[in-house]
Length: 396
Image (cartoon, rainbow, N blue to C red; front, top):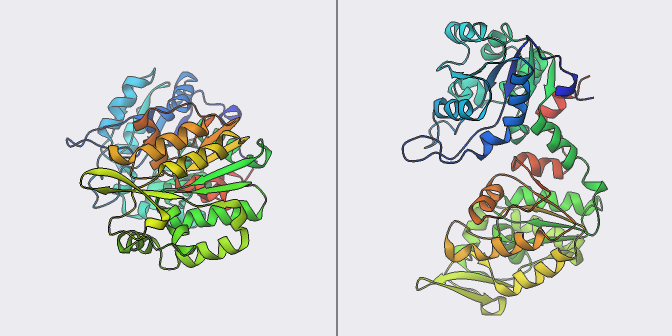
């Protein structure tokens, strides 16, 4: 049984809260989009208003990446969004950081530094070993309990995700609670149930497709993006060297795995009927009979969009993960915008996070029943697999 904030007597306690506020940064290194921060406001506000002393843990970027940065601007934004004061520490678990935790008053919050500045945070551990890492062991000494609200990182077994839940009484935050409730009960949603698997996570999407088809959760699977191109190659369509190389960069055996899935469930898997390329600075749509082409397929074409929209508009439940094309470029945003707009007309609609959520914000589409905060975690749940950070919460 997973305990939630409803089970926590928060007043006067020091609560460590793991959130996922990994956000796009501008050229100045400061926040360019606060959507992920705002997602956690309910959890953090509730704890502050219940007179807890809140210690926020989070990561930003990957070591060596352009967006590997401090959490100072994140703390400033939280200070604007939350009802209680929010301070920032440029350390994670040092003596100074622990003293800053001890100095908190009831109803105040402190954002600790980027957990990935600590090398062990970028490694996978069994929960018991994670609890013995320096970060978890030292911070646990000044915390009374732990709340995990970082569903988007729940598929990772890093110290901040699984160690604190082992060392301390642990609870799910409101984001985590909602995600588990929605994604864990897909089998109870209205039918027909249609999955749109697109974007660039080819292997993960093939795993999801096989899982939901084998378990009878999907009445139809619509493919697009690099996922769709992979299935086209598996079906014998010659796209051209540019598109094929992009697919092969994702996984050497992806085409074979897609082909095996088509052999088993081809009657329920929909493939693109046409593709869009760039030629002379213009969007050009090509039927499959006009392939191969030297230009890479950047979006699905109008015939595909019309066929998929018909399926989506009759759906009881639509589950979508990944953009249909390179939506960041105006020429190739059309497929993603039209397909996602069609999905909003389903009785119930669920959208996976990551690139998909970013696409929706960019395109101004928000009429969905649920938009997940997690991309990889959402895909993992849809395969029926366990999430390490959830598994360790489910100990009571």
